[in-house]
Length: 304
Figure (cartoon, rainbow, N blue to C red):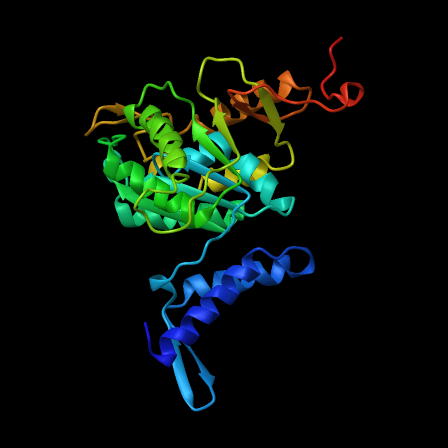
């Protein structure tokens, strides 16, 4: 890239990168600017007598997310930590979702339908970024190609904290997503790894334990976010809307899907974990490290 166009383009990209590290009053402006940059197919700007065209997809910019949830399929995040993502967004944090597969092996719905549903749910949860890596559904593997795909996304999104599925599950894709997510985050920080982007590792990894039979490390109060999370879940109509005359079982596939009981089940689960910390609704998480406490006097959750 030795042409004036190339040099000007690099200068502009570097200016955007510098802007992504700016805080304070420019935070909202920065977010809107980066959203515009990532969504347009190309745009032009003029310098003196030269007109330059920029193609954002060729030079993606780091996003510096605060919180990223990684899961195997569309709707997994909404069912396990959607309230926490919405709460973080409402608190001013930039959030994102990385779906490892497109859910193409699901009993109901096709890829395009699930893509639209996921986009609608993302808008409700107010996530800044959502994408699918397009890895093979029902055949998810923690192989080198898949780990590099996750590492590449981590280097681009640069999340401070990452939410992963718990490492034990009935569905092979779910526990594989946990392993794949962790190893991809680790590989993203290797300086000598031949991969696009600057080396980066998240600071914290959380595991969602909503469907695991383990005691969580902590529970997030999502009482105010529960209605929004419920709306996000019901965006997946192809998965959770009962068909007439067939309320519990898809006769063609013989797969049991608790469609009509979904709302009651979600509320019961969230009420259970909320009760553990003395609130109405909660989402549970586990971390492998000890939690640091600065002020033991101000610890929440009553003991007696």
